[in-house]
Length: 287
Length: 276
Image (cartoon, rainbow over all chains, first blue to last red; front, side):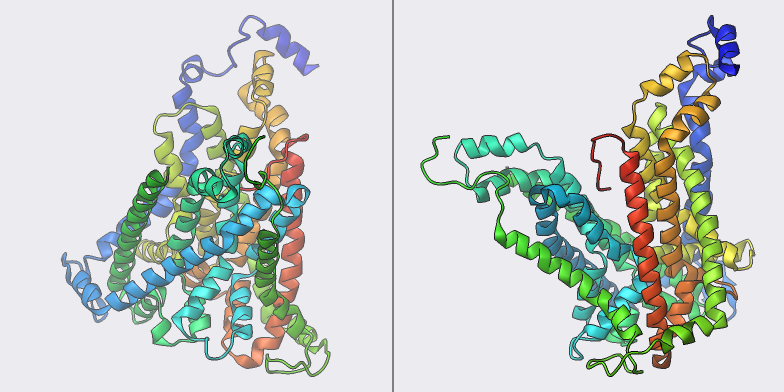
């Protein structure tokens, strides 16, 4: 009934929804109106806090007082005192990202190329652990770990490899799934063996998945707090950046905590940039 | 095909990789079996061999007042976070998929940023700004942190669905004289409903399991992960915590399968659309 009335009334303006004409005409304006709440959320909840944290890093905690004269003393302190932990976090996260992708790649490959009708079940099976309590998964790993391995950085790497499995498998699976199978058949027809086909076609084409998997794992794990705390059992030799930051917050030195966080973020950005650049270069040389 | 040497055909099954995939699955699930096994073991020390069967840890766990409170808090935080994040995600997803917007890439990057910065940075920066504007820490501050974390997840799920269906349906509705708003309610929304439910479920699970932000932004009340964390610090609490963990495990599996199934059902007809 309503529809009929609407139709009758609007046959003339069929192309124009009945909003303000200028507003309707400007697609960009309408799009931005729709996009603005989420954008404002991220500016207020993300950009502003990060900005204030940056400001804090140039202030100095003196006992109970916050000295707001700008100084780089915190940066000097972080770079002299905490660089071993920063470096350890970097290599633990890098090793975990590499190992997770190394182990996850064949599985993603299997699901994409061989699982056929059971694809859906495989994907569900591979993602279920990821959706269950992270704390309890890491704790369970600690329980079954042999004593001599526990509380070492290596144990932290293994635990991370287990915990982030889905983040490696899914992006790689998606990029493998996208590969045009006729390319492989063409290579086979032209006499390329399975290995050659893999290295010259499949692997280069799956690189976007590999890159996003590595980044998706490396970036969050470098700031992980739960794994080093539970697996490392509070041993300083397994501390990562987050343990240090947590300690600084506990002792009420927020500016120093902010500085440590920012230095680690800059390190992460550099590491990711160089890693992606290196991998792209390697991919070019493969082709 | 006239290849001189016998070549493996494309997609031919190889036993090596099949075996590897199954071993990997075992590696993935072995630690997860620890939780249910030891939750029924009649011993305080979490170690083999298992001495006997008991349900006392479940009874103990259910009797704990703080656990009930923490569970209820987590549900409240999860509902607030998932509904709010899905709403923000829906607005952004609709804008991104339906309009040509200058600066779209930049804004999408900004919205996805919480996925790409370590949670500890998010937690610390929120802690600092809440302190600066003197907002007291509470369950609400935890929920706010979770909204930030969940919005990119919601957006990703919804963008995939909005991109996936036939836009001419919406155009037809507009051509027939419906307003943009009515088109959304009568055409778009029913079509993306499965993705909306799936987004609600997934973001709820993310919030329900989130520890680090909650750890930083907690007031006096605990969420379930915070409660579990305190349980894991004292070995005497291990067995009841394992019982709780086993239940969470089972419930999560049901929710995940449900969410995945809905997303599958939602991606319409024979087109199988799995993955991210």
